[in-house]
Length: 208
Ligand code: MN
Image 1: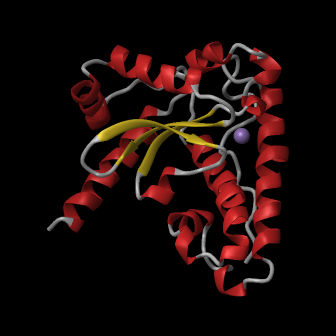
Image 2: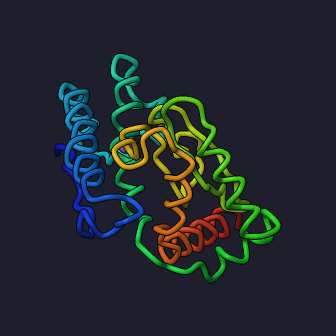
């Protein structure tokens, strides 16, 4: 089985004006596709890994043969991270439900959460990602370099923001903070709440 570019689930212009159609088109059809092609190339001579999803591969990097571990980390990460990123974006969804309560409880207020997330995303040096993650019990904001994924550290992603320049440069140039601010208009809080609820349930089961 080779990995394939997933559908976005919405049109390239669906997140306008916050994330522009041209950026979305290139980001999805060129950048994401390139990670997938390179992941497939890395796995070519390892048929025992062909049935594993990109998420499964990066969740257990120690199980990947050393000769391709770096490539799987980068391109498996690039494959999974972008798939996840597309899935948590939708315009004009209001925050509600258990994720709202958990954010208020963990960070003090939504504004405090937003400020902390924006600082992580806006000041992260070089290429990488900003994340809201959970270990099943608490929320945490982290940054990862390159295409590293929280899945490799046993954490469940709830929100991802791509802060590679290719994610924003066409519209925002060097103004990464403006891109981060705009991202807050396209977080699909219904989806994030679903992920959060599922992660909590899973934790409840595994600690029984
Ligand atoms: Mn990207």
